[in-house]
Amino acid sequence: MTPTREEEYARQEAELNDLYREVILDHYRSPRHRGALPSATISREGLTPLCGDEITVELQIQGDTISDVAFHGRGCSISQSSASMMTDAIAGKSLAEARALIRNFTAMMQGSDKVDPASMGDLEALTGVRKFPVRVKCATLAWHTLEEALQALEEGKFQP
Amino acid sequence: MLDVEAIRKDFPILSRTVYGRALVYLDSAATSQKPRQVIEALVRFYETYNANIHRAIHRLGEEATSAYEAARAKATAFINAPSPDCIVFTRNTTEAINLVAYTWGRACIGAGDEILLTEMEHHSNLIPWQRLAAEKGATLRYISLTDQHTLALDGLENLMNGRTKLAAITHVSNALGTINPIERLALEAHRNGTIFLADGAQGVPHMPVDVQAMGCDFLAFSSHKMLGPTGVGVLYARRDLLEEMEPFLGGGEMIRRVTLEGATWNDVPWKFEAGTPNIADVIAFGTALDYLTALGMENVRAHEVEITDYCLRRLRELESLIIYGPPDTKDRAGVVSFNYPDLHPHDLSTVLDRHGVAIRAGHHCTQPLMRCLGVSGTARASFYIYNTPQEVDALIEALKAARAFFSNDTH
Image (cartoon, rainbow over all chains, first blue to last red; front, side):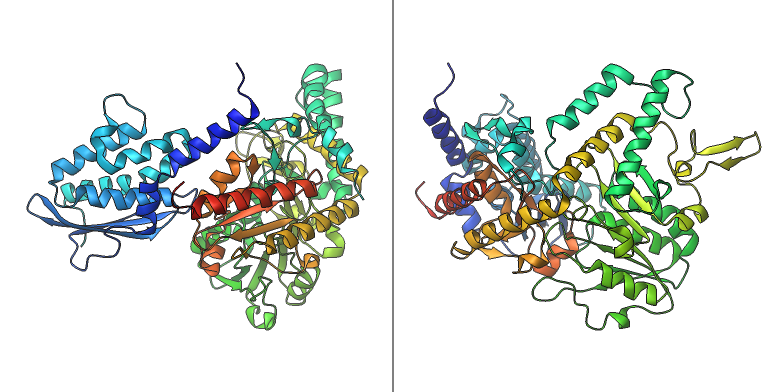
């Protein structure tokens, strides 16, 4: 059955509401860990060339732990809120835990059934982005940047 | 004036729906839609006279060659070029500008020379010159912007000197809509002994362009922004410059005699059209030029002035909306960039899309300009011959809906 015009409008409204959930707009309006870390162990800048969004992720590492994290940059509500949620999720975590989170988040955004979104805390709110394929790269920008920072850290190729 | 209702019937895509609503296509500055006549020209070529050109000694080859060269003649007339020899077909505006940078630029620009650009250039009229300047040790200078987002031309003479070999300036800004005074700029350039290139990608499709009256030495534009297919660009160049320039790409078609030791070059413009060109799309581009010529470019411009005027008036009704570009439509083409202060253009564009309104959001391939404006991007509506005031109304309603959507904390 083809949906009626009203049903189609309602579906679009529902998908928009699902994309821009309250928790996402909250992180966008009141970002957590926004700023710079003067004594960061490593700092990495991520860019999406198509839309020009920019995010810098800074990590302070003590031993095997992300003892502090910050981000700054500019972009849409999805890229900024995803960065904010990410910093919340990895602060105080071990490097291995952060890597696992990157893997799970990326899999969740790709729609993998191996990850239960309910186990992802606030990050679950970003599943609504999957219905907007061109926006998925907004949600993953901070995570790719974090991944690059951890990679550089591992290879010892970094400057504070 | 244009009969927009009749025109719309020529564009099959305009009758489709998007998310259950009539499509409101306000992104023609990115690429225009195509009339049935252009689509049929493509089909007719492939169904009835598909052949390679300039080589086949058979009927189909003759028909294809003559249609391809007829398109060159149409492009010549469209911009009032002195002769078809001045028209080189490329892939797009970007390739046309790169052709100039790689051939004329490499030969004529050296260490210590200068190239004059503006802060509003599209990356396609910026990156080729940055690369050339880096390779040759040349310097880039930039004309800055006024508060009204026009070029700051006071003191222009101070930006040019004996080392200024080239001024490369856009006719119309794709992000601001600003129409630049090409005639005056070319005149000042020539007075200084400087070669003048105009990026016509956003100008040629939207208003009468007379390349001789404007005084361009080079002019680049694209088929796909003016009802034609993608994959076709035009480089207009002064005949004497083309004669002096080395070929861009080497291969078939561009040669005269080839031996194992070397080769000599074909006449212009074929010297610059190596390999089998985009035959079908060039021919269909010719049909697009026929379509625009029949409408009359003065009428196209008048329609766009009217709809842009209306759009600006309606946008100004919206509280807190920031509108970029010159306030007076006589200084601007059918391009309107805007932003809500706390709303990223991508978020805005996503909501508009679900209301059936297609606009462009982002940096519009003008990152230095966005930095000048102090934003990461803008939302941009752009118009063409098929857009109606009702579509502007739909944009306004969608903007209001988007604003309400993001200011409502409990949605």
